[in-house]
Image (cartoon, rainbow, N blue to C red):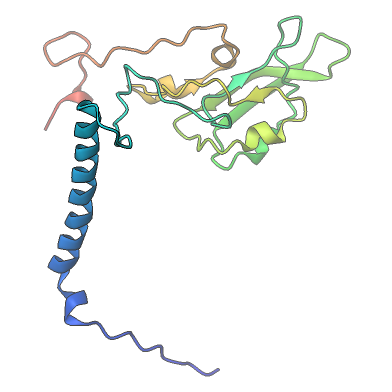
Amino acid sequence: MKVTTVPRPSRSLRTQVFVIEVWLGLVVTFRHLFVNLSRHIRRALGLKAPPGSVTIQYPDDPAMLGKRARTRHRLLQREDGAPRCTACLLCETICPAKCIRITAEEAPDVYVEKRAKSFDIDLGLCVFCGYCVEACPVDAIHMDSNNVELSAYNRKDLIWTMDDMLGRKKHEFRTPPAGPTEPGYTQRYQEP
């Protein structure tokens, strides 16, 4: 077997001195700053100008999501209120993050062979790829809830159960952990 060496490209002095590249990056940044600033000033004065870039004020102005945005999961129900999931385990099998856990049981309905006894998704592990939605043969799971507020103060709050995804249980966001002077403050929250 013949081994060939690959020569490294020669680097000029300009490439080796990073200060020049930093200045070029600052030029781009300040150009955006002054272009947007001038656009905002011209529009504020009533002159005709293209709109400048605007930072979205998230809690006050909700984010505009596209039609195909993949947000928090939700389970669909049948007409009788039972979950549509037949516990075929295809979504659990195809999930690349392995964040879906389904436990199956026999269904009381004679037309349905089995159903999900528990259906849990760990949103802390989920990569929101949408494979579970595509793999479901009975169209039981969707990612179109338009709920993007998924923050939590501990990992247990990121595990959504079947009742959470069916909308039967309102998921409330908890308050932050207690401070050092309040009861319930544990050792792991203390600063070193």
